[in-house]
Image (tube, rainbow, N blue to C red):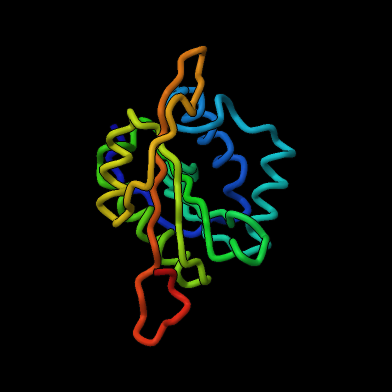
Length: 178
């Protein structure tokens, strides 16, 4: 069990390989992410570079020089009518869960998303990931629907829950969806 508090900070280029490996660890659990193994090096590098150039928020929890958790927003689409939307992804290594690290990580990422102009943040979570669903509800996400049998892992179908969070309405803001 880790004793020291990890550092919450924006992603830096030198975090790339450690982040990729952390995603791999969580992916191999085959329960939380849409990856089932470590993302391929060049595809991951291109994805992170594209998100970084676009200014998509990405935060990490770092401990002893290694990424132990992450949370990021990725623009939903470059089409003009969808540019206000972002997709949230996050994960924590097994030894860092249930210790209160997820809340500050997701709060920092959401706040950064509002700052860069996102108006809607959405996510997909497996319906049996009750811990994550509780965290998302705690920060204000609302369920928008269930997709039956949407995750197929090792021949077993799992439902997913689609959730979204809308930016707080500012006085005089006529661009907020109603």
